[in-house]
Image (tube, rainbow, N blue to C red; front, side):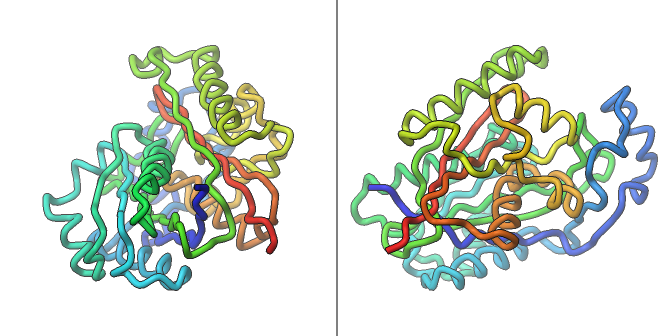
Length: 306
């Protein structure tokens, strides 16, 4: 079966800040991304969490379930997705506290990590596979990333922000999209810190070819692409190298407001597009994510009109 996916929701850090608020920002940027002008980055502000991350997770999950009209007690799986750095910051009882606090009394938890910004797309694969069990009705995917240390926010070609983003994959609830396929691929050179244009192009095209083949579609049918929010010129260049035309990308507005929110980016960009232009029946959408050593993607189709 092809599950529905929808009820995309985001909970951002509540403190809006500018890059100049980070002590020594200019020096940090030059050290991480030499010979690049931050003005071309495309990020105007970023968000910082001022409360425990569990409160933002609870806010996001409530929005997802309220939009879907699904009681928390009917969720059968909850998949948390995050970078390994954020995973190390979560307390040992994090999942239990979230589940008990929200009444997710039937949800079997899992966590997807180590793929960095690609983790949430791997979570879609895991969630889709959960429907091999005929008793599974609803799978909740929750992506989260946050950075307590300002100095760690400034990374190569990226300014990190704090956010939680989620969605519901469902057998019965319906939704604006269908989850056709997912794929991920590894770039060994990138894992070792020696990636190149050729290796990044290869890993992206490998994952894209797999997702499109499994989804039974060609790239020419894709109406919009939701990428990772990195340095704007690099994001556009890497997309075109992978065969994704620049006009298909939707990310500049969200990046201007929220910068790079780790593995939440594609959900944020999709939700922004849905709010502004809507998701059309029969159109294909591509969620993509890139990280050193990885590329992942998910192919989504607007639910056909009944």
